[in-house]
Image 1 (tube, rainbow, N blue to C red):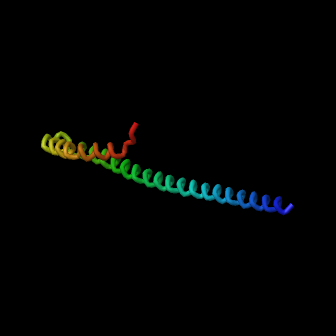
Image 2: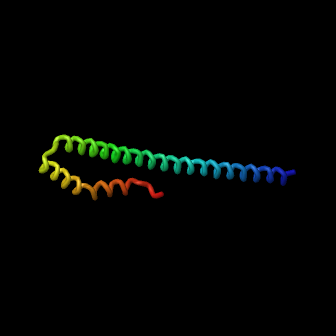
Image 3: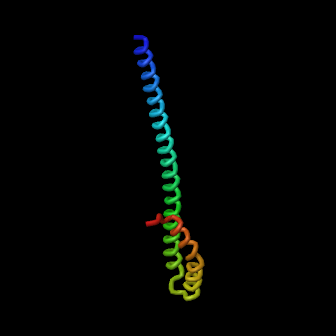
Length: 100
């Protein structure tokens, strides 16, 4: 009978150990989920910044075209400015576009 009591105690210890491992696994998954969520929040903020910058850029171009009117020199200066920022814009779009 005594050996049966020891067996029950050993089983209880094993069950408790398994539960602790399972709880630890859940905690680890919670930490991983929180890290993933934090990364997602940061990426959304970065994307919003890029989108907002693109909107300002597009609206600025429209305003500059309107301001230049039909003045060939003003239009040429605008074209030069736009060409100068092409590579920066292309780099920003490429850096913030997920791979397919």
